Amino acid sequence: MLHVSHRANSVLASPIRKFLPMVLDAEKKGIHVYKINVGDPDIFVPKEFWRGLKMYKEKTIGYAPSTGIREHTEAWVKYYKRIGIKLEPKNIIPTVGCAEAILLAMMAVADPGDEVIVFEPMYTSYKGFASMSNITLVPITLKIENNFSLPDESEIVKKITKRTKAIIVINPNNPTGSILSKKEMDMIVRIAVKHNLYIIADEAYREIVFSQKPTTFLSYINAKENIIVLDSISKKFSCPGTRIGSVASFNEDFMRAILKFAMVRLSAPTLEQYGAIPLLLNAPRLTKEVTKEYKKRRDIVYKGLKKIPGVFCTEPKGALYIIAKLPIANAEGLVEFLLKKFSYKNKTVLVTPAEDFYITKGLGRNEIRIAYVLNTKALKDAMDILQRGIRNFLM
Ligand SMILES: Cc1ncc(COP(=O)(O)O)c(C=O)c1O
Image (cartoon, rainbow, N blue to C red; front, side, top):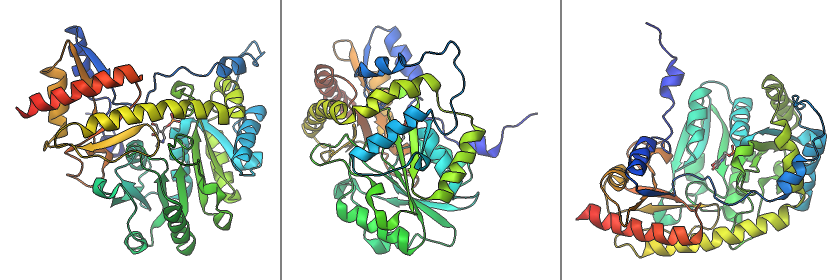
């Protein structure tokens, strides 16, 4: 009998996709399912993307250079310049989404058996990539009651061992919607410099912040060598299917390592690199529009959740997600109930149980994550249906 690797067995099935068969069954019965479970926005890609595609004049679609198409990489450089970061093209490499940037960055800084400190709950792909690369994630648990703020410096330092290579931060955060304060960013940088660690900062949602200016760890010039920033056009320009992200660092050894990996995987998508050029060049205007829309949606979801008796959540400050603690022991049971046994006016709602966003077993069972990826009218209806669904579940 043939076996797949332990590595393959250790990767969890996507928590987001496992309810798909139940969704299909509900839809077969004529029930409309509001899907607020994945960060796949319904917002149209800005028309600038199509303009960018037209810049492609070749008759063949060849590989792009591993370092990125020159104009595309330069567009990233200009984009960063506008937020005050002076990169050279050698400091940034386009990737196949931020997802690939995560894998390449982790593999460039850590060997099998090495450790990376993370804050849970966290974006689940990190867990999968850690399993694929035999890197151990060492979690520090953040609490919803504390607004998911970071613990004291000593609590983080306690987790550092001889095998620790990096600290991963997601800012703004998926799944919590929290953002790091300046004090927290300063603390992470201080720890990394003192203990000779990399900071892998996933800033895929950088501009989607509701009451402050976008920030980046790249601004810490005193920690230039330690900082690696991962980026994406998926969310800020509403085009996750384009699969364009980037990895940036002033650390030349690190960038050389990334370039070697980038050559192994050949290139990021050719046409989409063109499409992304005008998006990156018009980022301030385009991201302002999209953030305004997410703020409206955030308000609807947050208010909707606050109205549900027994539900606890705090106001998200960025990204497009919120975590809510339910008066229910097992959120997975609720999700199954909503899909299999409940509907209101032939409609129901799909949310994500938060358990899989945690590494520590048993945490997050009574929490759900909502992605506010539907228009305001649909979201209002979805929140009403969620409230009714929870009430029915508890009856
Ligand atoms: C925190 C975070 N990083 C990375 C990604 C992956 O982004 P991309 O579509 O650019 O691969 C996501 C997608 O949801 C995310 O939430």
